[in-house]
Length: 421
Image (tube, rainbow, N blue to C red; front, side):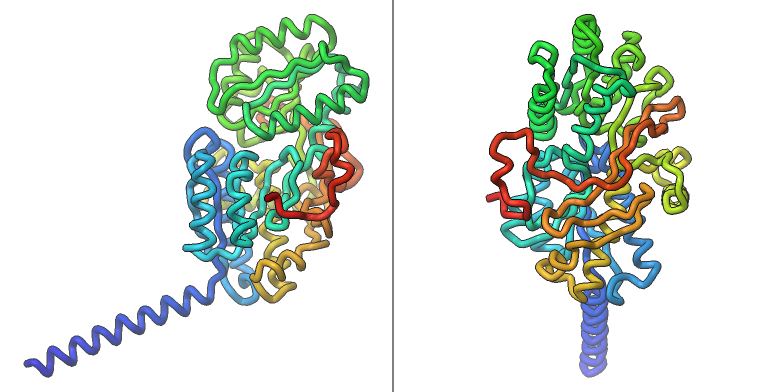
């Protein structure tokens, strides 16, 4: 009886050991990829779709055989729109989950939170959203726009005859680093064009702010002083009550156009867009651009959303940060193939000069020195169906200027990535 029990115990132990070995082999055969986006809190309205786009892109790469013969394995965490938690979750991904790369963050405050962690641990972060510049870390690749690839061209357009010849500017933003730094750059730019301080109004609201009644009334009052445009750096779910209040107070785009830097197709899904027709957004991609690469990209996303039963799958849309996520993951995969390794230093080197035929219709290039993509600039007008009609765009991709020439002293800063601390 004892002998039989011993044999059973030995067989069970051997089975468990074999299973453990199998799990170890499976783990070794995958490349872990971190996804660091808010799936709850004020930024979930914008970031959840980036998580889903990352998962779709990973599935697409795996369906073609993975990277260097290994499947990609997504590790998804939710920093819940809590900026210190971004750093904590970033550290967890790098030290516990042992991911080879992280795709994530939306707000600059979340990126600034994780940056010291990635620089300390030599991790690799791909950041997919337009931002204020003033940063060029060796541990970050920026696939969204710098100010000269979005904010500056948008304001130049508003000042042009074609864009309405605006003379006064109401700068409205969420109160954190991206809107404040962008508006510092825009104020200096406007002053260089002869716009007086009295013709520039600057107002900030906290994250999650929902009462825009007084602010919209003040915009109307300010616009009585001359041809006015609103530059909106409002982020997250606050965009819904802001645009609803514009409609409530009958502020039409023909009178006071609003150009937004953080409102795309995804944010407009929850709003009746009919009263907002004619207002603008500046990005580097819109779902409505017509080319074969984008037609496939949009169709694949809609099919994925339906197959995965994502919320609102019947009205699934693509947007600029989703495209930047898609491009970033593919570029990283190409660099890993080129480096024949996931080693951060080797991949960083292999990323320099990588190109990708993007859904925007342009071939995008990762700059050889400044870790930013060369991107086209597009200005789109809101349509009644929540899509954008492109009213202006650059002929080709523009090289990013992470150090804005409108901030004193930036001309002395290096044109290559350097640690921030």
